[in-house]
Image (cartoon, rainbow, N blue to C red; front, side):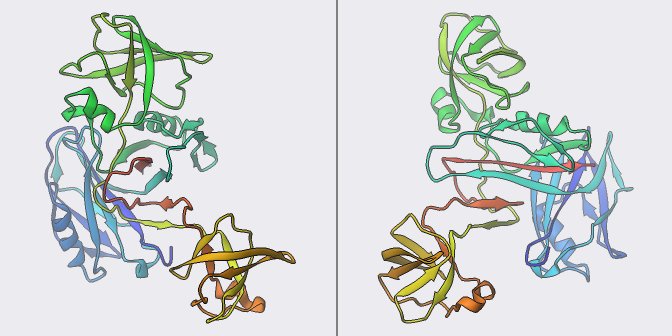
Length: 368
């Protein structure tokens, strides 16, 4: 964990309105009393008052029904390295099935610069692996797949996300989602989609239709069955059958409006084998399919790119300004060449400050 920010999630579960306070222990040191309704700032202040900690950051999220359940995502400075697990004393909290625990958190993210995402992915937990999940899988589809693994006791989704509670029109729903399916109404509560939606949707997903007003309670998937490339779906609220063909949105994009804890990486396309400051010629390990690149934080145009032995020789439009690199120790120098359109890969925390049109993310913590 050296060089990365350690993240631990303090989770409050309750089936009724919780009351009271709890304590955090770290290496034998006890925190001050933390109220069950503490804000992010209040939690961070209490933790930072401990002798073991400073500059701890905390972000609070709701999950599940969002009424009695809270999660505080605690981010430790990278210099702390691998932080031992926090220990919770929740003897002073009250409520039906109320408890406070610490759980690991993961972030699964897909990001693209263009509207060309497709395909499936799978999640491995220990020796088990989920069913194939579509790149646009709904939250419920991913949750169900994870909960079907025998070594996952419970999993929940965290994060700031929009929901259909405030959606008053089809236009608003379209703005919040880019997953649209043409469908045919086949019964008062059923419709069909000429597509295999396995790994895309799940029972419990909210559905909004173009030609039918949403109901007060909303329509939710209660049943789905797939035959070849046709999916039959039932929902909770009836249609008046006035329109037989319409369009449906099964889910919305999960959108974060603040930086979530974690890190991201930008993969390099090649590594410099030889380069000297002030010269335009450099030698790299891999071929580039672009006429521009980024090195050491600076953009260069490429005027020439030719093979030279097993490597590639580039002529830059401007003199190279990075550190000198020599072939006998280029691995130690570790100077990389980046492409202007390479996709981002995010780990454990996703850094978004505004809506991202072609982005999907799932942020989970696991109950043991």
